[in-house]
Length: 153
Ligand SMILES: [Zn+2]
Image (cartoon, rainbow, N blue to C red; front, side, top):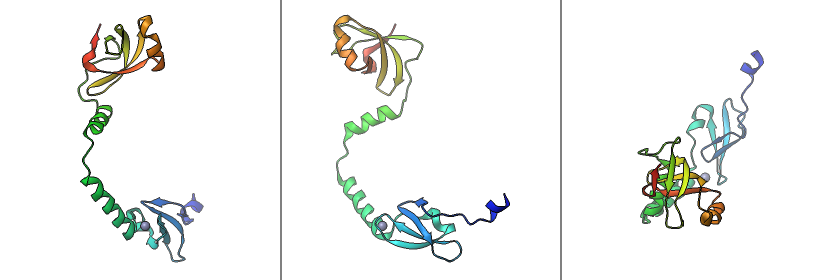
């Protein structure tokens, strides 16, 4: 314990924001931090965790953000992402069996819930009509369908 306590922590290689600590300056608790663009600065232990980018990198990032915000948001993609990330209202349970119909299916299939999203849900298919087997096999017997195409059995 005693030796650990008194040993100076070697911070070489530690990463803070865009900066990597490359070496000690020789002064107590002072280090050289190098930004990913190559710019170096001195930093003391206590301000290390505040490191983000050097000024020129920060400027570049501001420019990129400005450009990005001028672009029209891709609404559908965003919505799709939200559906996957945030399950809002739960409708299905893992215990029940569900009958799933979809335009690409010849016959309704039977599945068990894997995950539920806002407008869609994923199911593991446990029963199907022979004519749909090939299509289902390609999907590994897992499908994501709109909730309105699913009914509890
Ligand atoms: Zn930089």
